[in-house]
Length: 200
Image 1 (cartoon, one colour):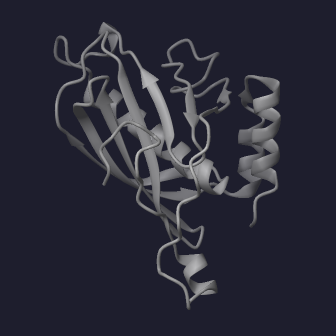
Image 2 (image 1 turned 120 degrees about the vertical axis):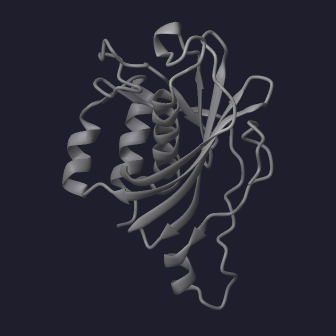
């Protein structure tokens, strides 16, 4: 796995089993799309991680180059477990969210976590910028999505990494989820139309 926080760095391709079945004569790997300019992603009103109206939330904002989901997070002392050390639960929460977005930006689906494994490498510190990246690695016929995520310091030191398995949110529930999103009207309109126009 590429450990760079630079979304333009070389990336591993997504393994798409649906594509493999439809194109058995081709390689088992689906080539990654070309890198694009960084685009902002919308956010919700209520989410603990990104909700603008959640008084207890982190209020993070996410962006993407079309493949990698990215966030930047400056924790505060109230996010600590041991003194001057960001609580592992906060670390895992941010990893989960960036991996959810990694699926969303690639396949235009909302997903929820079925399994996540986190490896803690070094403490995150209050007041120090943390950069999160998430990637979709395998799409199992749109029924299961396997992801990776990392949190690193501004200097590139690894704080924590994760792998996750995600299940799709039913379409009927997705429509309700879309209603909670807000943000820049242009970004929001494009986001909603892309989710509604995706292939089943």
